[in-house]
Image (cartoon, rainbow over the protein chains, first blue to last red):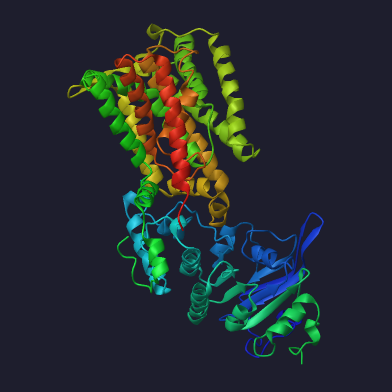
Length: 273
Length: 342
């Protein structure tokens, strides 16, 4: 089944089973077509970049994979099992964590509360089971440890409100939350869009660290240098479809841009050779 | 802010990190939202106490506490709603309607006291639930929904009661239990005052220490972020309105004890007074920030101003004027506090 939808499986992937696979996803908004039969595969241990021009359907694709949207048609398979995500919780339950471009953090809540938002830890014993008491201490220490593990321990206090952080620090909190809970896949939507050079470098390092820990990463980005720096494979989306999957070793950034804009045909590009 | 070294800090950044005194005040108020109402309450008490030395007599302070019990109780539920970035204009109408249901069922249909109380608590909770359903299912703005239900419950109250009050002698003792005096030291409080304080303790616990409480903040702070974080936003909203309805029903019980009767025309200012208390208490009308204890301070500030100015012989119109100024100052302060340096 996998062979006939994967257009250019690279040597590394071979016949391995994808962690996430999508077939023929269609999503329309009124008369506007967001996804026009997109296929998608993510393999274990890779950083897969998804690139495409504005309106190519990158965000729509990612929202379908993360449960924030339900596709009108097509199927999504997680480790070969057909799965339907109706809500973000469903994707999270399947081990897929997403960092949205909007970051999806509550600005007035503190860092620890944000990291555990929606899956708070309760105290052990009757305090937790009967009085439903939250374990603020444990959540704070785990949040602090998680941020330090990812090398982003430069925050002043784990109890400060997220709105008092810089853009890069907020991004770090959102990524740390995803990394703490994502057991299978982490999806990052434009993680470097709002960041300066130094902060961008930190996020790219974070992405490589996640991959080295065995977590595959899907990276949606406009930034070609970033993409070519960290991605193992690059999924190119154009007009609601996947037109090519290339690698940084076989293609140059200008090839990728040419395929993305339709100036070069993905199937006849260097990857197919 | 002492541990802000670690990373390489260039001179310009250090300049940006040095805070002016105003910024420091801002940072502290941002961190402790109940601080400004607490300061206002203390200042008001000191000034008003110096105007008339009867102000600090235990008997007078007890009177303020009793006067504040009803609005203070409503403000608990109002805070829950405002924290979700909503507003409830129907709180007083729900309370009065519930008080008529409680007292009327006992007086006119011979329902025993405990059953009448349970019936009232149920009706109040369902009334709050009606607001919640309209907000979540029909996706109407809370302002409009509760403006509608304000009129609906006001009309229902008059229909059910035929416009007549229910006298204290016809109301079972249990329903008037909240009016019982309780002496604590030199203070003469009522069980109703203690019941109100108990609601603050419980609500504070829930908002601080349970996932439901944290989710109320998250939904009010950024609804979409809460949804993406996996919070069932509509369920949280509906639960908040149901809980608020229950709180209004308990406050109806406090009202019956305070007045010693159930009147369809009681507490007509309660709708807006509860919002006043919450806003003066430092809770943001934009949702997501504020503390429940702030609303108690807000209710006390209004009570203290009215009482202290009355003792000082100031006309009642000026009391109302002062409360109006306080509301505007409180909201302006909130706007300033919410502007964050980042």
